[in-house]
Length: 163
Image: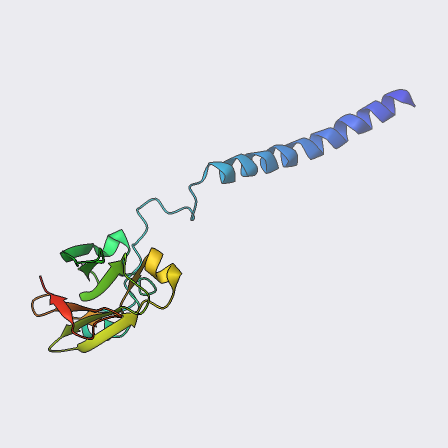
């Protein structure tokens, strides 16, 4: 009777306990693993989405060119009358440049151009663009002959600068 049931309970516990301990150990191990897997070395940085002339006309953010691993640099900056500020940015990893503007006005056009890759431009379309910053698509290549221009909404004459 009673002793047989006690023996059966001990036998069941002896069968279940190792499995329960193994499961608990697995949970603890998984909780202690670093995010992203079990590799011991540093993860490879993501490659840029484009390089050089292959970047012309593409968005610097969506191509990963603004990521720190691809070393985006401000190679030139300019403050225009009225407060608009512009920069020429260049990514070492993408080998491409783009212009960005902030404190501009609705209707202002921003352009970046190079003799090899032509021109890329964007327009401040609304108050949100004007209050934040916007940037042009990229031109591939070096910054050697790159030029950025602002055409304000009230003047079609471009105001340009280069590194």
